[in-house]
Amino acid sequence: MSLFANLPEVPPDPILGIASACKADSFEGKVDLSIGAYRDENGKPWILPVVSKAEKILTSNPERNHEYLPMGGLPSFTSAAARIIFGSDSKELKNKQIYSIQGLSGTGSLFVGACFLYECYDRNKTIYISDPTWTNHRSVFGLAGFKVDVYTYWDSSLKTISFEKYISSIRDAPEGSVFILHACAHNPTGSDPTKEQWQIIANEMKAKKHFPFFDSAYQGFATGDLDNDAYAIRLFASMGFEMLVAQSFAKNMGLYGERLGCLHILCKDSNSATRSGKFLEKMSRNIVSSAPRYGAEIASIILNNDELLQEWKQCLVIMSSRILEMRKALVEKLVELKTPGDWTHITRQIGMFSFTGLNTEQSTTMIEKYHVYLTKNGRISVAGLNEKNIGYVASCIDKVVR
Ligand code: PMP
Image 1 (cartoon, rainbow, N blue to C red):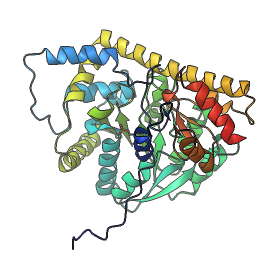
Image 2 (cartoon, rainbow, N blue to C red):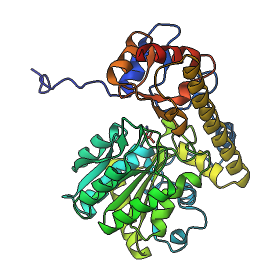
Image 3 (cartoon, rainbow, N blue to C red):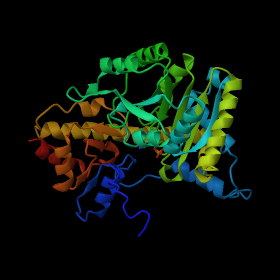
Image 4 (cartoon, rainbow, N blue to C red):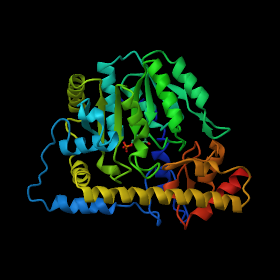
């Protein structure tokens, strides 16, 4: 008998499992709103034109090869990625207080960061994730060995951030806890703190000496502007926090499968940043040995060329504007149908997702009866909506809430 014969069955992944169920569905009018991946107005994946240009430049370079990258990844990419997230005029960058290594997209960067905290900070600390959050957070930090708990984030009846309770969670957590903060476009709620609220969060975190670990998976998707979407990270940096930042280029460059990301550590001085950075490189060496090359080379070409950089920013505006239009259109259709309830939260929310407020039962009916695939917590990827399917989706929402 196999050593593994009695392993328990692994339940389907709450997001990827639904995406696979949609793929397997033969219904012609099915709609996939499960996975956080941008789709164009025809419901198709979009290769950013600026990425195609960079690929041409890359593949026509006779010097190109497939050698391993250095332990910390491609330096021309990691240094440019640091400028994108901290700002090219960042005082902390100038002072060399930031060390950046390439990671396996957002997830791999989070994991290396978690392993670093386990080894180099304090493995007895609790990691606090927002309630709700991206479903993988708990497992990633749990796998690194940490105890994971939640901080209050959401008021499901008002469909807004439960700010007072959020602040109480910060106050109640033991001093020096690690807080995972979504840099922008919070997944799944699509609701971020205001600038004033971020300031209060930062003050409270500082008072309790908590350690911020920013997860930036959607820079450019919230407002269409890279600088705006890095507001919270730059605020914390300016306040003298030491922190980690996991930065993904999956969504904002449409490089999902290329697994392109960066992990940054910001320390109070350059000596500590270098020491920590060397540890990060060592952890990354032990976990993945060497980061993938292709996406890093593409991004490096784009980020280090002014013209291509501007073109990329235009692509971000195209993607974020289409999502905003779809939010508006969905609310208009629901109002037209006189669907019971107030749906304005859909246009108040930002980024890739809308937390519709549909409960588990309603979400299940959407999937099983109407072939509209969303996660069971009522989250839809607004990027999956287009002119052709939006009327159908609105009519299904209308039916399940009546
Ligand atoms: N964090 C959050 C909040 C996310 O939504 C995602 C992607 N769904 C990630 C991290 C990681 O994505 P990736 O590993 O593809 O960069």
